[in-house]
Image 1 (tube, rainbow, N blue to C red):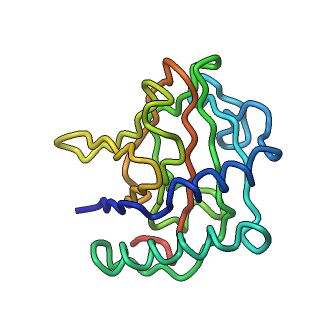
Image 2: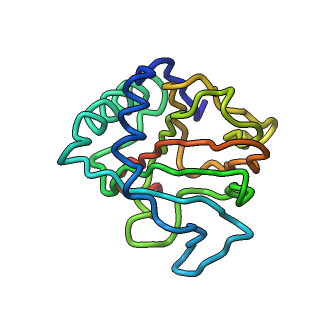
Image 3: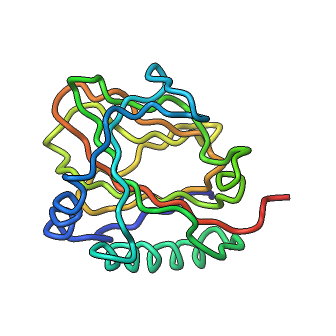
Length: 182
């Protein structure tokens, strides 16, 4: 099994605080893939959290969840977190989405990604569409929409965020790194 669910990784109040920390930092439309803007593949605004400053507690909680998931399911050689925490906003006005993709790539950092963890920051009733789907080969898993829950999966799995049709979906993503897969 290459997925792991964590119920209640963050409380509702903690989700609100993460959103408060990110509000000022949202960048304009993000569809940047491989250095090129590709809005047909991804439409979202993103913000990077400073995991050593005011959001250090967020990174600590993520690290605890990743350690537990890796111990219980993956057993990957995870040695570090090379990237900042990313908060994404998928809005109905932009038909926010992220088409099928893998988080492992040829880039100088992406080639070392082992697992991805995505936290649901929005209340499930605040938007429609916007589901995180992970392709497991013989079926598609839709991630839990309970606020504060997390879904951890092997970064090489193909996944997507389907278009948001009403409201706004917020999520927190962190990638975990180690030696390249062989």
